[in-house]
Length: 275
Image (cartoon, rainbow, N blue to C red; front, side):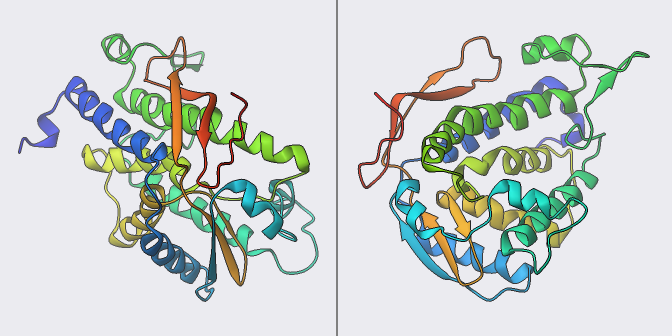
């Protein structure tokens, strides 16, 4: 195996493309959820915030989850816990989980061998202008740092595909009936997991054993299941859809996709997007 230090930026980029596709495939998978793996990793993550194993309630679609979510906080309510003054009382479990995830991502960023664009936008020149987003090989030839191209081509690209192209349209459909409590997206949380996994596999980041183990459980959730809503006693988990059809996003450089009309159907027959 070649020493990673001897690899060119072009070589690393070609490897990164394969890693990105691997995680995009997880993000769009229609295989039934690996319930045992999901429940194990969620139990470990709960334990990291000093919570016991919850009872798991599996449903076939986000639509089926909605009646079970009464009392869980919305994203706006979670934001209230990081503002001053804080609300009175004990923060919801989802607030502690969000903090746990944020701390992990900060620790992973600290292990990156270059200035991580995830922490602050990478800029160039005396005027601190952002680097342009160009076709990746052209960008590297034009002097855009590999770290910037990797952030654009993995983190940002997968977020466009799996957040803007998938989960946001579905969440908008759910929100037609009122505010939807905050959740995590399982397979569609791939963007940040894939980014830090790729940097590690490319030899551009070094993480401590505990951070690697912790990242591994978030990665397992991406590889194994769908959306999930946590609470103190119960965790509502959605199985993966049975059908996903996507189309390329025009004018993008990193194989970004989005759902086609009628492009997703869950195992109970729910189709959130009109055909």
